[in-house]
Image (tube, rainbow, N blue to C red):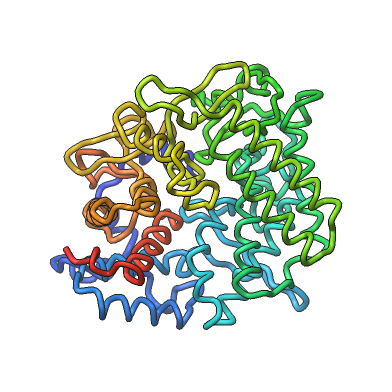
Length: 473
C-alpha cells in the first residue's frame, strides 16, 4: 500500500489489525513472536544475530530484549533486495510499507550496520551495493527523492506537474536527499578504507549534487525545478505556481520540501542547510584524497563556507525567551518559522548528523525551545511527550523524535526516560511506528516503518555498549 493511501485510509491502526499483519504466536504471552520467520527474511547477517543474542543475554530487561530482536534487524529482514550483477554490487532498499527507495530512508536504515561490517563481508557488500545504487538514482534525476527498482515503472505520482521520468516514485526536491548518500559513503569509506564505490558514476553524482545546490541558491533565476500536485493536501504541493514562496538569494540553498515530504513554508530550511555544509565537506574530502579531483573539491568547500556564513547571518534568530537560536525555516527577507519537525534532519538531530557540536550554545538554546511547548509541534499527553509535525498533525508524537532526543542528550536521566518512553509506546506490537497518539499508543500510523525500527535498535545497542546501567528499569 502506498504511503498516501495508507495515511488516508488507515491513519490510526489498532493492535487488533496488527495481528493480521504479523504472526503473533501465542496471543496470551506478554512478548509474542512478531519478527519475520527466518525463511522469509530478505537478508540475514550472523554478526547482527550475534549482537541480538549478546544484548538479550546481558540486558536484564525482557521487553527491551524483545524489542531489540524485532527492531534492530527489521531493515535486513524486510526491505533488502539484491540487484547485483556480475560486475557490480547493487542493493535496493524499500522504506517499508511503500515499495520505493528513498535516498534518505535507505541511507538511514542501513547506517547502524556500518559498525558491524568488519565482521561480515556480506553486510559490507550490501552497503556497498546501496551506495552504487544511490549514485545511479542521483544521476537519473538529482531532484527526485524516491525511486523504483524497475526503471520503466510509472507510479501513482507520474501525473505530478513536474518533469517526471519513468523509474521515479516521487520528485520532491529535498536537500537531504543528496546529503544522506554522501554521509553513508563517507562513513563506509572511513570504516573500511574501501574506495570501490568512488567510480566515475559516483563522481558524476557529486557533480550533479553540486550543480543542484548551486541552482537552488537561486541567485540568478528560479532554477529548473518546479512542482505541483493535484491534491487536497496543501503540504503536498508548492504554492506560487509551483516554485514555492519567494526567497532573497543570500547564499542559502532552497529545499522545496522537508524530510517529511511536506512542502516548506520558507524555502531556506536551516537544518537541511546545516546538513549540506557537513556533506559538502565530506564529499570534498573523498574527491581530494581518493579521486585527486581538487577542482570539484574546492568548489564544494567554497559552497560549504558560503552556506555556513549565510546560516550564521540569516538562520539564527534572537528569540525573546530563549535568546539566539536556530530558526527552522527562513526566507532571507527577515521572515522565520520557529518550530521543529520530527523528521531527520531536524534541529534536534543536528549533533547526531555531525552538523553541530552537541555542546554548541546556540544548539543547546535551540534544544530547550524545541523540547518545550513553545514549539508548536511539541506534544505532551498521558502516553508520552515529544515532537510531531504537520505531516500527521496534532497530538501525534514521532518515536523517531524521542529516539533522537536520547541520541542528542548529555543527561543520563533524560536518555533513560526516552528509552522507557519509546519502549512503552509501541502499542503492544513490538515495533516502532511513524507516530502514536499522545494519550494512546495503540492509536498509531504506519505498521511497517523500517527506519524507525532500526533507529531505535541503534540507540539500544549504543546505550548497551556505552552506558548499560541506563537499560536497568
